[in-house]
Image (cartoon, rainbow, N blue to C red):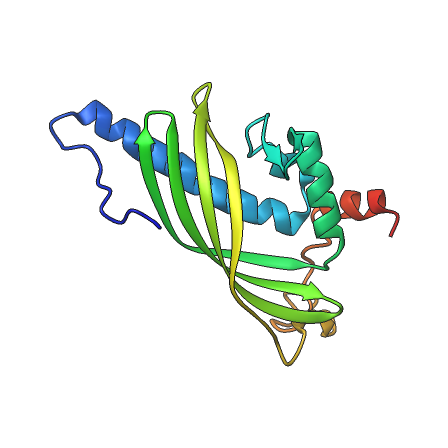
Amino acid sequence: MADLSSSPPSGDDPEALVRALWAHDQIRALASRYAVAIDARDIEGLVALFVDDVQVGRRRTGREALAESFRASLGAIGPSMLHVTSQVVDLVDADHATGSVYCLADVVEDHRMIRQAILYRDTYERRDGRWFFVRRIHELFYGVPRDENPLDQSPANWPERSWGRGTVPESWPSWGRFWAGSGD
């Protein structure tokens, strides 16, 4: 359970306050970078957000094992749009923290658009001055199919029309590389 009583250092130590604020900012950025990397299928950028000795399942470790895991899970779905919402970060000490991140996601699965409400329970660690995910537990509040898949629309050809299918995710170079490497 998130410790909602966590508070920053007192104003008596401005340097400690700045370090805490900087840590919070870097950690919050991890969640946003994770969402963009997932949606762009930027596997290299995604695994770089994790410690180099990340535990993957019960028997594997390392970023390459994590990359294989992400390639398999992301290769099973179509486009996704992760929307990071509420986030709580609890600093344990100068190099360790935990947190909870809420996320709404629109995910194409079997040609249907699914809306999900997700809770990520995170463990973070600072190494060489930079914060990383150590562990990210994905929990689902719910997933519900939407009546329509907005990606099935005709192209919007922005700025010609403000409605219709856009250019993302195909405009991300990493998206094309991901699918070119999957054999699909």
